[in-house]
Length: 222
Length: 42
Length: 216
Image (cartoon, each protein chain N blue to C red):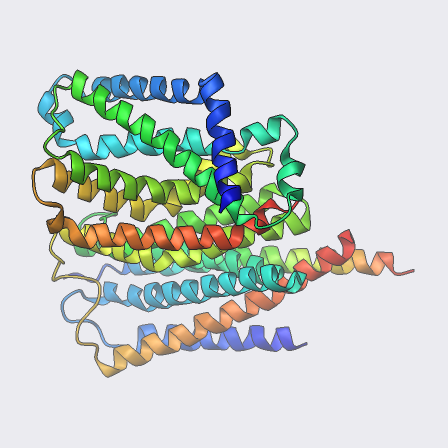
């Protein structure tokens, strides 16, 4: 467990110094917002109707960028062997990287919500607690698979192609559940009315986490 | 409802073509490998 | 050779299946003869599921034992799995056009099967991109295991999502209840497809074994 904390802390520290990933991702989120506006036209009702889907498209796309870079630092600085040769439980590395990714996505998603509220005159405050829960559950699913596949594709020539190709079909249930639950929450309905979806999300999260924990060491060998 | 035999034949035909093509690829590969093995053996 | 026998057995079974589908099974009352596509569509998806279960077994087997035979099983099962899934989708779509009026509906089973197709095409793409056998086997195994674990999750999520947006159509591709001749024809075709799968598996694993021998 302590090793997981060390991994998170290392990544957080290095990110705090450079802030390159966070800045770029937030800027990317802003760009997406413009893309959505241009793609859907000036009709505000259309954007508002599509909002749950748009939010999760944005989160998934940002996640593709963020998770794909999970092991970029280790790869570029020739530290890959360091990870591989580190003694002890490899799954701690997985947990640490996963936690780091969750932190990163939390900041990106918060920024995106603020930007959406600003540019489309939306008010999320009423729905915020329930919305936050849905966001955490959904993002965890994305991150659990994303961190695993990120490590898997890290050493491949074609990682930019393969990573989305592998990730997107795998997170279909997360997408379906998160969008539906977000829609419920943003429509002002209580989260309990989408309880089956919340349960599905939670169950999927558990499955993905367990698979990640169990298989990560096999990904990390050489 | 009318019988729409053309759809039935299209579906079965497509399946047959796909499976046949895969099978032919497999047998061709097997033949090549068998040939290679024969050549390797002195 | 045993593989030859298996092959001929599969051919015989497939012919019997065709006979059952077109000769023995009755003309369906509501949809007419286009319903006979079901004798292709349903066995195909069942065989695909069996194939993907074998991918899972092969993946698990390799990670636990590191014996290449398991990885060969996973590869040999993934290829026909993708093919049968493709056949399921295509036949489902072709069946849907005259019965529902469109080539595609985001019907629960079609959609789940399409997601399954995407997952395992990705699996094969991944395998194609890694040359080193052990790394390839490990990477593929992880994807294979997650893919298999995801199958029920995908199934339920798509089913619930579908139920939200449209009540289940009464004129679905499945006649209910299933009469005996229809069930028999389905069964014969399912056996035939399973035999075909095993034949393809045997041939593909043999090829993989020979390729490994040549490489090593």
